[in-house]
Amino acid sequence: MPTPFILKLQNGVDLSASDQDALLNAVTHRKSFEAHQDIVTEGTTPAGVSVVLEGFACRYKLLADGTRQIMAWLLPGDACDLNVFGLGALDHSIATLSGSTIAFIPNAALERLSAGSVAIMRALWWATLVDEGILREWLMAMGRRPADRRIAHLFCELAARLEAVGLAHDHTMELPITQAELADTVGLTSVHVNRIIQQLRDQGLIVWRGRVLTIARPAALKAYAEFDPTYLHLPARTAAAARLPEAI
Image (cartoon, rainbow, N blue to C red):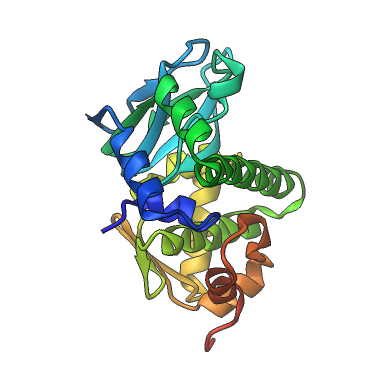
């Protein structure tokens, strides 16, 4: 069965069986991380690219007072640091949000993969462009969306991204993060986030129990958030499923 990493890249480029085998063989080792553990810290130069196989991770930066801004959620199948391949030292840190399994592809192996297969090179470039599209959407949300729509939109995005790698079913998915981490993502206080979550629950839009989030009324939540998955650049069939309204 394809790994989330292969499934993620397949959303952008059709990879042959030999391309998939080459990607899998390039992984030198896997490592388990506990929640809230740095994978790579700001200012360091990783020797390779890390890929999330299980769990949630994030990109973040800290202010001098210790305040944290999470700038990206990294889900199973996501490469954490493809940008370092051309830039060197990271200008941010990467950490786990939950217990996670991370695979590592050495830089030399990544160079061989890209040189040996146009499809792999295009797939990795596609993944980088999607990351940029998500960042642009988050920037717009932080600057222009009301706080409640900001969180609703993030939940819609999460569902679409996890469905694209086979990890969300019937609008239900694992969400192994705290409301404090959600607050660090959307630039709000934990108290404000708690109020918004309760509001979305009271409207019957979501059910969030423990580590499991269910979007109870998908069409209504998408309309509420004005969610358009175009920026995720998913295949037509997957994007259509994310866009078309279901029964409210």
